[in-house]
Length: 287
Length: 278
Image (tube, rainbow over all chains, first blue to last red; front, side, top):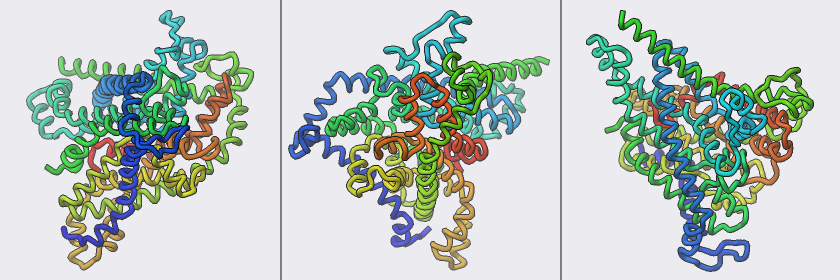
């Protein structure tokens, strides 16, 4: 359908301006990362890739990088597993109301601020006042959830609690999208619900798996609020974004920007293919 | 007979999984409520999971007074941001929907990339921009930063919602001689009602819960609700009743919206996650 360029642009203008600002921000990072913005100097000198070298050779950043990638991997595996399990279980109920109620139950963590989630779980993980009060007498377990390197695993668990519902929702949506006629003809052939689920519905939910994986990974890459509100800047739970933050706060802007470019690069690996192929094909259904 | 039994087993297994996992999902919310209702005397000795022996509004009352200003500030920021970003996003979506060629495709892809790249990575330039405008540590500064980030997201969501509208509505209006402004206002906006509500609610909840942007763009803890909630972590020490009460009160607006209009939030979330069309 024809639309004149003038009208096209005037409708789009604000969004284009804001998007350009975001891209400008991405590029500005390159400028800051290659100039010596630090507490000692004001960025007058070009330093080339030295900032990047400094970031990538520091053990602090390496730790943060490793932790972030590991977090993404764990959240993808566990989030998909719990999400798929929940989606399959919710799918067993025929009534739409029941399905909606259960979806709401597992999605409510997404309506909470991660700061609130961090505060609640910080206390649930408290060795003496938290869930150990039940675990200790029942299972004889009394772990120190937030001590040392344990804290990382505990935070990953909490992030699963936050995002598994999201994954379940995506899977459910892709279950509902499976062609009804396929399901019906299988039912006529006498297939049970479980057979239909394992033979037809789940194999046709590959798209749900891809989307759920993309977003779980993206959520993990930007992890900041949760670890920060639970344990502040703790060396055992530092993520890439927290590294950016701590370098920013201590005014080593060139290090913050170099790390920011690393975050952009890691997310771009996921985001760009998704934006190029996924959105048109999966969301807008344009071949 | 065999069919019947497998049916029973299947539902039993599903119910079991949901009950076990569901308890894990309820415990944090239960603890939040229980902890908020504990008095100073009780919070010192009791574990988080124990119900308050004598429920008291002591903590809630004290905290709600302190939360008043940050809540007002946050409302003043997020309501305009949600309204404006959704409106601008819907206009952009209309333009893209009308065009549907290589140009509009490229623009949409660029918008999508801007939406999904973590905004944490453009923190340094963003602060420079806000400082350059003289808006550091002001409510308009936080609002502007949120608007810059959430408007492209709103546009993306609205493109997804708008693509569910059958084209003949617009073609019919064009045959009647209506211009684009008129088609957008009179035809598209009314048809987009649920999509607009979903986008607005989604952005409202997301911005209300945002922590990183206000943290970076202001001093102190008074300008945003999540900052204020966070401030209790440092100052309340082991008195979790006040922390929980602050968390509870600060979460009420998004929680109430979620419970009352969850359908729309979920639609927004699905559009954000690419799960389902319109």
